[in-house]
Each structure stands twice: as structure tokens, then as C-alpha cells.
Length: 414
Ligand SMILES: *[C@@H]1O[C@H](CO)[C@@H](O)[C@H](O)[C@H]1NC(C)=O
Ligand SMILES: *[C@@H]1O[C@H](CO)[C@@H](O)[C@H](O)[C@H]1NC(C)=O
Ligand SMILES: *[C@@H]1O[C@H](CO)[C@@H](O)[C@H](O)[C@H]1NC(C)=O
Ligand SMILES: *[C@@H]1O[C@H](CO)[C@@H](O)[C@H](O)[C@H]1NC(C)=O
Ligand SMILES: *[C@@H]1O[C@H](CO)[C@@H](O)[C@H](O)[C@H]1NC(C)=O
Image (cartoon, rainbow, N blue to C red; front, side, top):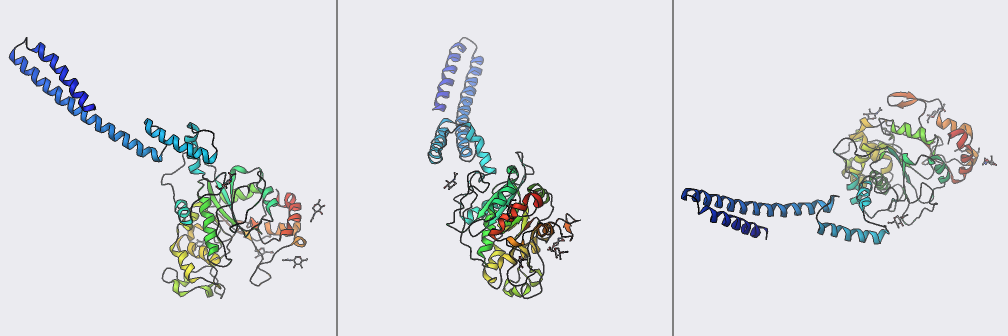
């Protein structure tokens, strides 16, 4: 169509000039014919190239639009609007205007900010969570957050204590809860735990499913680009410092807090299987508490690993417990320099036996909590000595809640 119109225009224009040219010399006429030819050919070339450029332009815009938020030609906008209408019907959104275009970036950087539920499978989730921006810096004001990841069977008996701990610090944390499938954590809408349950899978304690659940929690928390530190907690854990102190400690740390040590006994090296060679050698084998704290970089390394976790899946079965060996060993082999090799979650193994001590209401005193906060022992923090070694503690029985709440203001300072 365009080509045809251009040709017609060129012809008629050339025709007018041809008529007047007859009055001049033959040489001039020749020049005129030549210029007619030039105009004619130029007309065809311009016509052809314009139409093909236009075609390319619209095609590429359409491709761009399918994945970005640029404006373009009417038919494409109509398509998007019909998509918006579908979204509108599902989510009861009032409109699909400019505000939604802006929101889509917010959704990209904080996809699960208001609701931790999503429809991704584990493999989709781990793949997405493993993505790292290649560009330095952020095109938005990024306040680093601490992701608190609760790995539980069901109820959170210490919930009121945690709610008190988090109160007033909304901008600085995210919460993720992995409970057994089918369990629904019921909390009020103003609780920081509201809609924070992630899609979960069954977890048989002591099996590799525990490590899978830890990875699932890390991956969910990684989806939010503001999360910088990731701490794993159980239902029997409590905080022993207030939020500002915990936040400053974790955000300011150059290292992760994953306990990782070589235990020569049958509870350490004794659990190693030679079938893990050559990827994992006995001298690389480590043990450590399951209750870790890691920085974002380390969290990405963990969710990205399949090879080493599959060795644990195959060769670390009771009396080998993947949750006590997988992350400590994996970090020791590849990322030891990022690790402090100690835990920030206090626990009491003094009684001996396979389980640590559980504290009930009769054990909760000011002196007891003070000793967890600071018992005179020093530890390393960013290569300096400090007496602040534990930020959290376990294990506390559900009925220890009330005396803990009584002490929180005076001893834990929240
Ligand atoms: C959160 O998402 C789940 C699943 O998509 C949905 O069932 C639930 O109603 C959502 N909650 C809110 C408050 O939107
Ligand atoms: C922790 O252990 C690793 C070896 O896995 C070592 O490279 C690193 O220096 C240790 N970190 C500290 C703070 O000592
Ligand atoms: C808790 O207190 C009771 C009573 O004093 C005591 O018997 C028990 O050993 C204490 N538990 C722990 C783990 O210290
Ligand atoms: C302080 O706690 C550490 C472990 O957290 C323990 O090894 C040490 O013996 C304790 N010190 C005192 C004086 O109780
Ligand atoms: C907690 O404090 C209240 C009020 O001070 C007191 O009545 C209650 O007995 C205390 N509970 C425990 C378990 O210490």
C-alpha cells in the first residue's frame, strides 16, 4: 500500500515537470528526464525501506511489550488491557492504569511482600531464587532486611514474644514460616506473621527433607531483593536481645554464622561415608548446629547447589543427619572464608544425650537469661573480641512463655 502510493506521487510530480521542460533545450530535457528517474528510484527506495522499518519497529515493540512496560501501538495495548481485565477479575483490582505499570517493578523486587504464598514448584523456585543482578547497586532505595525463617511442625508457642520483639521495626525484617503441609497458622491480621506461611512439603525429622525445607525457606526469602541476612529458627527459639541490637549485629557482620567444626568422634567423622568421594573427602567433612544464619551471597550459593545435596540424599541417612552436616561441610569446601564457623543461637548440651536441654517455666530467671546474653566468655565478631555471642536461644517449652514475657522488658530490653 505505502509503496504504491509513493510511486504514484513520484509519477505525477515527475509528469508536471516533464510538461514545462518541453519549452527548454533538449539538453535541459535530458537533465529533467534524469532527475525524474532519480526521484522515481529514490521514491521507490524510500517507500520500500520505510515500510520494512515500520514493520520491524512494530514487531520489536510487540516483543518488548510482552516482557516490559513500554508503551506502544494500539493493538498491543488492547491486548494488555484484556490481560489486565483477567487479572482484575482474579484479584479484584480496581483498575489497570499507570499505577500498575509502576507497581510491577515493586512486585519484581518484593514479590511476596504482602503474601508469602505462590504457585511455583521447588525447581522453579530454586532457579528463580538463584538469580543475582550482574549490575552493582540498586535502582531503588534499598533498606537491607533480616529474613527470619521459622522451620516448625505447626504452632509457634513463642509467637507473643516474637511479636513483641518485632513491634515497630516493620521496615527491617521479613518473616517466612515453613510448617507441615496442611497446617494453617492462625494469627490476627495485624500480626507480623499474618500470611507469612510459604508453600511447604512434608519433613521427616532427621532425613534430607529437613535440608530441603531449609533450602525452600532460603529460596522464598531470596525472592525479596531487600533481604540481606537469613536466620533459621525453630518454634522453641527465643530472641535474647532486642530487635535493633540483633539487626545491627547481623547487618554489620562480614561473616555468616554457621557452626562448622571437625568432630573426630563417631557423632562427627563417624557419620561420613566414603561413597561421597571424591567430591567430599573425610578431611572436608564438618558438623554444626542446624540453626544457621547466613548472608545473601551464601544463601544464593546454598539454593544453587544440587550436586552436593544429592550426595547427602544418597549417602547421609540415619545415624547421619544431613541438617547437621550438609551446610557446614558445603561451606567448608567452597565458602569457608565467608563463615565465622560459630552459631548465634545458644543451646545447652551439658546434660548429654541425643537432645539438648529444654527449659520450662521453673528455669526462667533473670540470671539465666543474662548468662545467655553474656556469661563472660568472649567470641570473635568481625575479627574483634566481643562478649555478645548469642542473639537467640533454644529450647524453650511452650509454658516458658509467660515468665519470658515477664522478663522481656527488663532483661531482653524489648
Ligand atoms: C494469599 O495467597 C493465597 C494463595 O494465593 C490466598 O489463598 C490468600 O487468600 C491470600 N491472602 C491474602 C490476604 O490475599
Ligand atoms: C572458618 O573456617 C574456614 C574453613 O572452613 C576458614 O577458612 C575461616 O577462616 C574460618 N573463619 C574464621 C572467622 O575463623
Ligand atoms: C529446670 O529447673 C528444674 C527445677 O529447678 C531442674 O530440676 C531442671 O534441671 C532445670 N532444667 C534445666 C535444663 O536446667
Ligand atoms: C559460657 O557459655 C559457653 C558456651 O556458650 C560455655 O562454654 C562456658 O563454659 C560458659 N562460661 C561460664 C563461665 O559459664
Ligand atoms: C508475670 O508477672 C505478673 C505481673 O507482674 C505476675 O502476676 C505473674 O505471676 C508473673 N508470672 C510469672 C510466671 O512469673
